[in-house]
Length: 211
Ligand SMILES: Cc1cc2nc3c(=O)[nH]c(=O)nc-3n(C[C@H](O)[C@H](O)[C@H](O)COP(=O)(O)O)c2cc1C
Image (tube, rainbow, N blue to C red; front, side, top):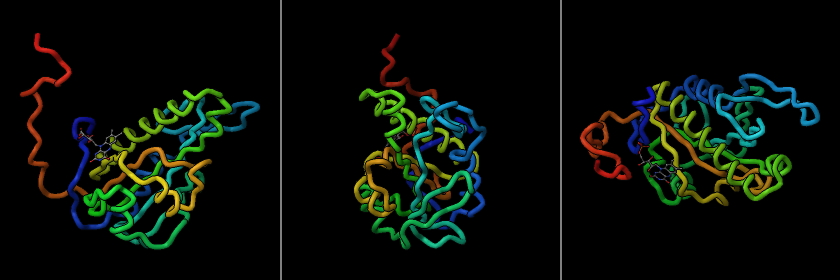
């Protein structure tokens, strides 16, 4: 499964089953245990690590091709394992525009917007580097998402080119206490492999100098 992970750019037109989305969200964002952190309260742990166990990211969603779900912008509540509607309606045009014109994203089924609350990391480590550490957390969640989605038969991707002000407006978050750090997404895989792919073993990594 690790070796099957790829960033996908082509998708089948069929909707993603709701059960598949539910399993993905619970696996990546649901609590796996709780930690008694004394004065810091009870912290929820996930399948991905996070600095100080703060899990400063929330998962927001753009759903536009998921079975039995009206297209719209949602929040995933990991404790209730439920979706909370933020804004009704989610079109291919809004998705493409929010993803800086990357129109292939609209052929997928959903986006997950990772949005960080920077206040807890800044309290934990009052230093500009706490922002950098938050971005590392986003990367951990992104890889867990990609591997879990692959295991579930989905075609995942991640993007950094987006318009976070537009995303924040659709999701009705203030872009301050909840600010988008990374965009993930998936659809069902298309029926053709990417013609640009060359089998491994034929090429060295560009960074590896010849012996
Ligand atoms: C943090 C991050 C941001 C990315 N942003 C974009 C993006 O905005 N648009 C895009 O087409 N691909 C994006 N990619 C995907 C990369 O282009 C892709 O990972 C790369 O081509 C290698 O392919 P692979 O993931 O199948 O190994 C991003 C990947 C990462 C890790």
